[in-house]
Amino acid sequence: QVQLVESGGGLVQAGGSLRLSCAASGRTFSAYFMAWFRQAPGKERELVAAINWGGGTYYAASVKGRFTSSRDNAKNSVYLQMNSLKPEDTAVYYCAARLPQNTQYPYWGQGTQVTVSS
Image (cartoon, rainbow, N blue to C red; front, side, top):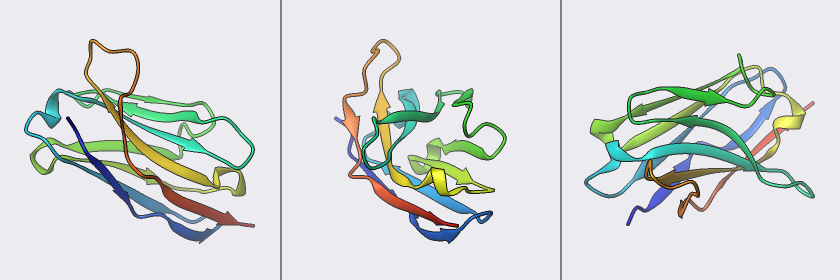
């Protein structure tokens, strides 16, 4: 079992930056594949970024070059640095975790709101 708690959301002007954090419980955090999803009002949830146990990353095309995901296995934490934010980045951002052999993400945080004003 893994419990995830996100923090760091807020209101920011377009062009600004925010850093999201996700703290995970459990002794085997380093084994988990971590991801950030977001869901805007009226839209489906979408994968924003993912990071594996070794630090390898994936980014959605819409955020590539602006967002950076990192993890600190010693602190059981994963981060999402968001730069050059746009109003279309406004959404609830969720941290999620899965083991490598799984294709679905069974563990989710409660979400943190990010609002980007124009």
